[in-house]
Amino acid sequence: SNQKEGYLIALPEKNALSGMINETELANEMSLSYDAKTFHIAGELPQKLLMPEKTMAELNAQVRNPLRVHYFGGNDTKYYAKHSFFSRPQVPVVVQKMKASPKESLLVHCADNDFTRKQLPAFISNVVDDSLFRANLARDRYMMYEMLIGMPQLATDFQLMINTSGELYFIDFGGHAWGASRMEELSFSLNKIREEGLCGESFDMINHAL
Image (cartoon, rainbow, N blue to C red; front, top):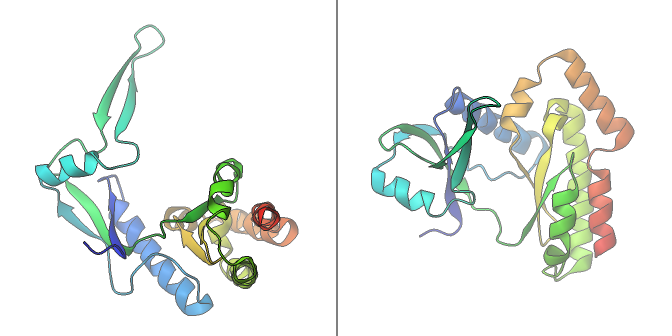
């Protein structure tokens, strides 16, 4: 009933709970140190819950990609089976209350601009104030680079969303950030930020579309 909040629900995969806790801690650090925006809610931690069968059926009817295709067998015996996204009731899932993302927003995956390029025309048509958008994007872009210099592990698989006012929201950074613990990975990420300007091509493409 509250359109400003929603729930992130993860399948009961290995380390799902600890991974979401790590991401929550990172989100808190990003907010306190750099005033970076995420969809995490202060004080809301992920938890394991049992999913009733009715709830499972309702979610399976709404998720973006409700069918998962599983491949079995070798080259001689191939067959596929389709299963609902959540296939077993009464199995613990990891749930976390989050802020809802803006209805009109643009997903930016800095390693792959194809999706952003396809969605850009429809998104730009919803931008009302070009000057405000450019000003907010420039401000948050500067903040983003400052944050990445201080936390280069975030750059290993960097994704964000932009609302129609040009504000950046950082998403899906937990697993990749905490997995990049080796020094050579961090060094690579830092060099990528300094020399190539991470997401620079994406931001240029957005500005040119205004």
